[in-house]
Length: 321
Image: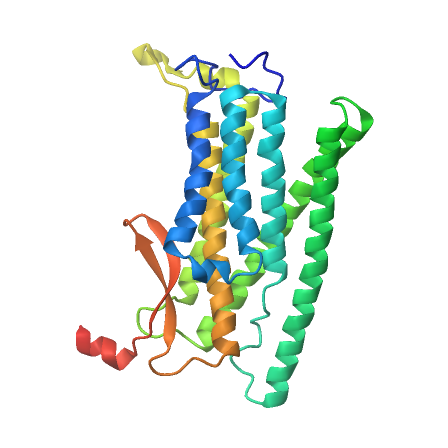
């Protein structure tokens, strides 16, 4: 329907098996999860998320990834594959910028003197300047890659070099994102131990749990991507010989990669919100009675997210029990 399939990848889901209008129905439907995720982030967190440095770029990249991935799996055309890959590269760069710009929480909560607070402020300003330089380098690399892959003919040196650079850069940036997220989780957890939240607020253990869950989801997603790509024949032939029962294809790319990567992005976003809020709380010296706090809450009973809540002192919490 959309012409010959000229994409570099044709996933294990059988083409046009469910409908003549969509090449890979389940991969296409689950691609929309990224669009839904971006809208849910705005719905449940809004201003709290947008205060995080480079959060608008993250949201836009997540949404565009969903659009590009949907078009790619629906058509299996190479131009649509690029619309899937370029937003993913942009998302990795935006997440790296957000983590690069984060405030250093390692000594916050103990700066009792004006000089110590001034030193922290100067350090945070230097970090933000470095993050801006990193961001401009990222924008330049993304623009150069996009210009080459769309401006140079496929198969040509410039086109293939740009694709190779994007692949290597994407992998390197993702590794940095999780390295920086590890440090961000440790900083936030350490600060919560030194300056704990009130009753019902977010705890150090919850911060670690958010990061651990994000990393696990990403590993599940990567594993699903690899298995679906390299073991397609075995996946299509799954069966229980003793019962003479053929098992359905498990949709690893649709469920494992799309679902796992969506969950990882969501949880890293929660970590960014928590880290940013804790930094603001300490800098603005709002840790006092009746001040706001943050908590890990659940939307619809299944979606965890970090939000600001009224601070409840332990004595008041006991009275309400």
